[in-house]
Length: 295
Image (tube, rainbow, N blue to C red; front, side):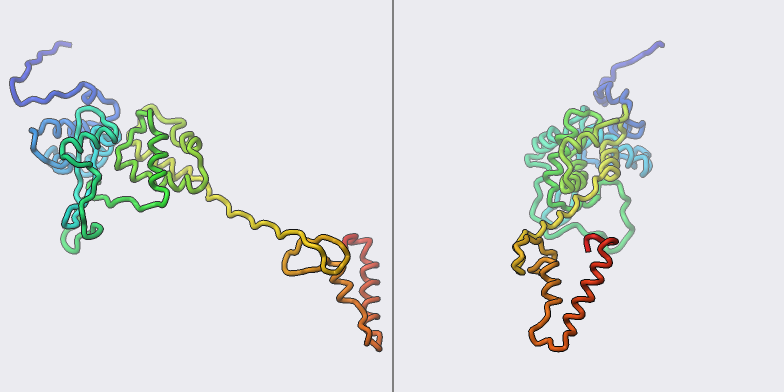
């Protein structure tokens, strides 16, 4: 293989070979990244606008952007301005950056943390009239809040730490945190979450966020069972027999004492009707005893 290479004197971009030979980046992702890196300093062009200029279609752009974020070449943050409008800040780098590194670089470039919100007048609202905007991923609303979302984000960071195939951006962590929080709420331990999310990973992960979301939803543990009520405490039978009973409702006497009380002959029973009834019940119990000893 013969090659002839002339070093350009101007208008060139230094690109690591790792990007050109990256096995998990599609041609559209590489084109999008190289186009961004070739822009002069100070030129602010969004990824979606770059895709339009490069002739990358909507579906291919969405996939390419997801790949670049999964590999750490693109990071973005949403913030709210003074007028209440939500905007997206994006960072593109020629080397993979972890979420913390990207946040530090963005803060150093702008002089403030990328996730710091400004005073606002409300949540973002959809357009009232006009043509709907294309869903490029840059106008996605924040994920719903979960009471354990912060713990879920911390757990997810610990689980994926050190696993290059599961590298996540800060936005990915925020999006997946409610699902991890639900695992925690259902009683899953950190070890169980790690085993379910990291075991049997493919050699190449095209979208760490998509893979983890699929596993978090598909392997979600069942809700923790409701605690069974504690049994009522033992108490002495109020009938005076000396037995201990465990009431199931509001009874205060054992079964035998209740029976004796129900069949007792009153002093004024001159007709003997109650006594006859008592004898009849006793005869029935005696006749059924061989078939039902506990009766």
